[in-house]
Length: 138
Image (cartoon, rainbow, N blue to C red; front, side, top):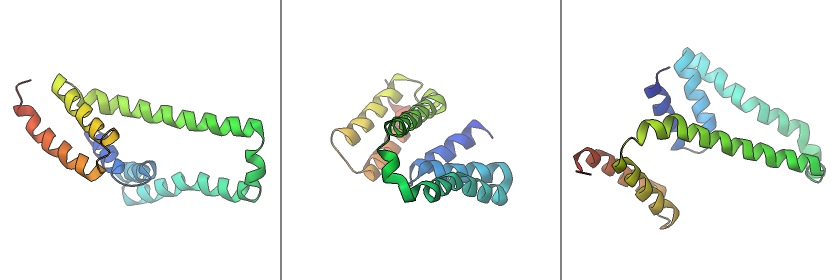
C-alpha cells in the first residue's frame, strides 16, 4: 500500500462515524479486494461483540472493581496515544511541510475548537484554503 492510498483512506474514514472500523474495511479492501474488506470488517467488529456478549451480564459489577476500572482507563489512554501517533506520522509529517500549512491548520482547529463552527463548514474552508495555499506568498 502506498502512502497516498493510506492517507486517502484515513482521510475518508475521518469523515464518517466510527473511523477505525471504516478504515479497517478500507485497508482490507485495498490489500485483498472485496473479500479482504469483508474479512477486515468482520475481524474489527468480532472482539467487541465477544466482549459485549461475555461481559454484559455482569458489566456493572466489573466496573466497580478498582483494577478493572484502572485497566479501562489505561486502554482508553492507549487508544488516545495510538490516535495521536497515527495523526503525527504519517498525517502531520506529510501535510504540514511549510509555515503556511501550519497556519491553515491552526486556523481550522481554532474555528472548530473555539468558535464551534460545524465540521462541514471547517471541511469547506479547509478545501478552499488548501486550493489557495500554493498561491499565498508566505
